[in-house]
Image 1 (cartoon, rainbow, N blue to C red):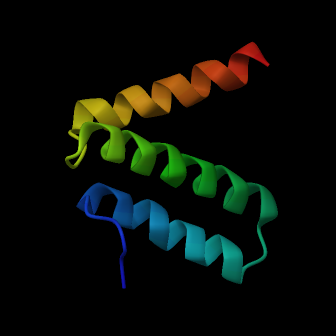
Image 2 (image 1 turned 30 degrees about the vertical axis):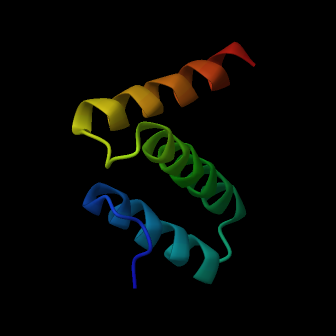
Length: 68
């Protein structure tokens, strides 16, 4: 069962459950953070994200990681 409105996030959620099942802690952390950021953006915009907005969120996360 998927609890996100955007179909594009389903894949990430499935990967998260797989990482949890396989005890892949770093993958679980990254996917949890990614899903949370996308859900926050969706809430902010009050609509599902477009592909471009998903890419924008991913780019922001990558930039933040590179800066640290």
